[in-house]
Length: 464
Ligand code: UDX
Ligand code: ADP
Image (cartoon, rainbow, N blue to C red):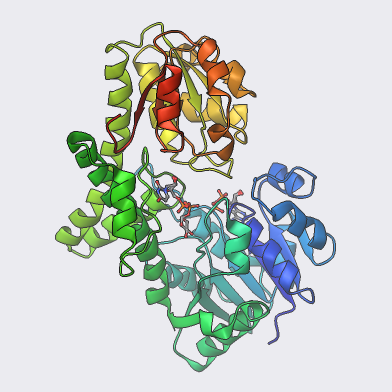
């Protein structure tokens, strides 16, 4: 089989950018990204894409209507595809067995069932969502149990390593592409087909093939180890604050050791995003199920340290403001979980905002890319607050950082957007209540300059 037609189920942060780049690099292949959501597909077909990702608009503009299509016709897309990516959402389960930790595979399962219902010809089905180890086996079980005569399936694991905010460059120049498949003649042939797609732009030496379970576990392992580095440096930031060491200096010194390297050692208010917490919780759950409690406890600690870091930061804010925030106005700069994305999933800003609201503050939020509706949903859903109307009265969302900080007692930087570095903090100081505080949760500001202007400044991992 030569792949001429690809379909991707799920037009989210993974499916959208991945398939746009495949379409860009494989002009002879028709790529259709199909989603249940009419609104999402309409946005992908409009000038305002549903996700903000540097460089993505240009890629979509080049390919859309040429060999890249966004559609709600899921069955039609499956029917004509030779290869199907499953990149639907895999949230953490909120009820039942494994609640709060295990991945909820209901969307993956329903995608597999739909493929089995619709397919009339052989398909290569590629698992791209982050799923627990042996999920490919579950997909295979569903497909095989519902197999029609003459239709065969090959299931591959091809985990995604793109980071939001740099998705397009990560896809264009990936460190590696991982493909897991069955060690049979047919399995190896399917792996080769998928390799041939990536070989359009990725050197063969960077395309690594292995067994399906290794591929699935490698994704969880990579995310767990990246998150572990952040929790490690964050744990040391507490030691720095207690001793007078500076965590940035420590990170630099440690990172210069070529065996360690400098990436993912930026101490912060805590990590967020749709992957790190979810994947580690998944790993912990899998270890418990495999009767490996010591391994489970080891990885759980990475999450616990992240919670501790977020808590430490908000405690610092409350204590600095004379232990009461009742009636005070606090400006939050940045709501996304990192810069260059509008995504707020597991953003530490949610924890910060909730704590400040629980303490009685009014909060004024500015983020360059997060929609007002998203912030409202994040802060008033039942998992975050009991009384949404009370919270709503004390939340205001701004499209300008100067208006957001006007009249505030404190500014809290939650996301490292570049534009926050260059704001006119003298002007801002003039319009704030005194004493004026800045809590820099991302270590991006010039703290000495702010102190000279009159601010009380606190940050992570350094006594000021
Ligand atoms: C991550 C992985 O990097 C990616 O390979 C995987 O496919 C999906 O999960 P993402 O969550 O998009 O990507 O962003 P990432 O850049 O990894 O940042 C995650 C969180 O860690 C952010 O909240 C970020 O601010 C924080 N972080 C990152 C730090 O606090 N310090 C650092 O040094 C790096
Ligand atoms: P991710 O960050 O993993 O890409 P998202 O939540 O951004 O996750 O995107 C997942 C997308 O998958 C959503 O747009 C959702 O509507 C879509 N989806 C869920 N189930 C199906 C399905 N069976 N077929 C097609 N799309 C689906």
